[in-house]
Length: 398
Image (cartoon, rainbow, N blue to C red):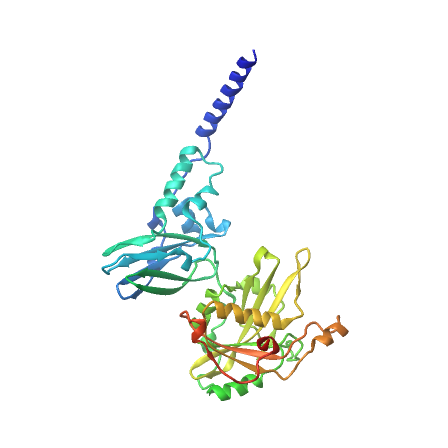
């Protein structure tokens, strides 16, 4: 009798499994060229290696893969690599995203609700559309790399190795459907063409003469310290920031922030770096300066750090020097620095003032400003030019 009952139970389970296999949604998708993203492809070449790349937007991605990957924080990057050389070429996906998603990983996390046949079709679809790692001599191969989503500009590298050489390509692509906060301005025409153009020594003095802090609409210096200066062309600066992990802020996001003022206007751009776990973030705010340096643009800014305080409320880290130092290190290890220098600020708020006046003094600082000359192309840490201006802050000496 017990054996009979067990047989009945197994039969019911087998029937349920069979019904589950028959049930579920079908997996539907459209051809890769169903969108317009291929027409937006950018190209670069180095010797026998020729690269084309493009990033489909949210709707284009949904059509190609049948799933809203953006909603899951996943963004496919399309690559095409032509190997016109005579040796095998190898593409390194970690150069595009150090923590990229494998194709079957993306398929697996989306399996729920689909029939068995649909899941098989999904696995096959993602696997077949993934960018191959090896490109034979005289061969052209293409596919997708599944990266973490960047809603604004997408900055990434493509490293190809072969024939005893390594070639690195850097791309900056605009993702459809996102408008950064600085798009509201015409930064190229913000000032007249005859703004001063300073050589290094004159630049040092101009940075030393900057106000200690940002201000309010009336120009009163009531904000946070001006502690970071970037030098370079606009496109180079953007590539460097993105490659170091900083993300753009949308116009909508920027409107929700309390503005800081310098040069009679609120900040031109805001960039953020989210900390692991989402419990805080570092923030960079920049103003284009009314002067240049040896033909390069100069952006004056402030680095700040916010951490979670109570519930969703964040609080600014009083140690603003930590935010400045963190931003410097991120740009350094992002291999974006051509040169750097330190300038001692005029105003110093010692840490003792913070301990003594916990409510009245919102921050403390050594007053130093770091000046960073950025490069769009990777620069080795051993090739950075160090300009000896003012003595660096104490943390650099220890």
